[in-house]
Image (cartoon, rainbow over all chains, first blue to last red; front, top):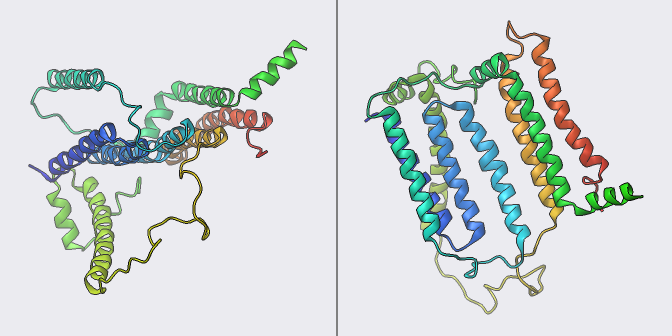
Length: 173
Length: 150
């Protein structure tokens, strides 16, 4: 067992343990903070597997931005948001869906690769990614900007009902 | 850190080279991050050592005067709960941050390659279009008064 295997196993155990804490904790904010550990461990997995840029993107976007967005959304919901019993609902549908998709993905993975050794790809550095994006995937890259713009304007319109209402009033005039 | 993996480990550092050799097939790549890992480990050990020494050396004789464990606000007893509902405008700022973080993710691979031979002004123009489309979003937010703090 090489050092990379040990690192993969340890980071995977951290990710699974933190993920279990996310869904079992009784405190919504703690769930968000456990999510930081879980996503950070997944970033470590990417790093060990050689996807260097994806690992740091995971840290920047998911650990940095998405968790902040999630915590802000939690703080928006209502006050107070301590440990809440009335938020609980039956756990078995979620457990069923989680276990089903996990087993399905594992079966897919085993049937695709079996137990044979797979050639390790070259590390996915920023240079390699830039070469691919600006070499052959320019159009999807530009479409991403339109998608982000739509998400931005949609979030502004949804979060500020006064904006849409004012426009409607002007149109009716 | 990205793109700097050719510089590590420093030549002549026998311990680091041995460690990176132990990390298997991806010697240069994982070895470069082993340096980072060792640095983080050393930082954590300094922290643990400092606080452990503090715990071992300090006298343990805590006093429990009345009111010691009561939270206070500027010297006054707190009123109400410690959680309050936030305004939606904070969420818009967080969302703007997420979007421009996603944008910056695409800037990193672009910044590495755009000056290489084979990429001309076209690649610069492509990134210009990408940033301009996103800038439309900021202009929209600005015109709608989302960025003003009333």
